[in-house]
Image (cartoon, rainbow, N blue to C red):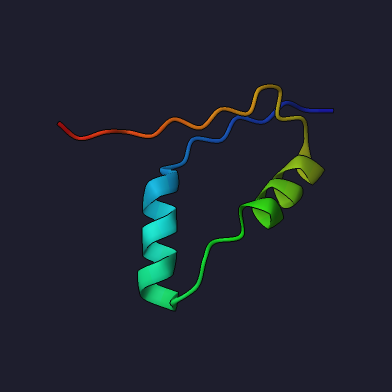
Length: 51
């Protein structure tokens, strides 16, 4: 199985989805689709903080 790396600005995804579509982003659905394509060896989410 191939290994996959995903780099995403999750805070931007959250606010854009909420403002543009009036909905919450379904991270579980995204995770399910991505993991069907390969192995995600180490899930890690980092929040960027602007100072």
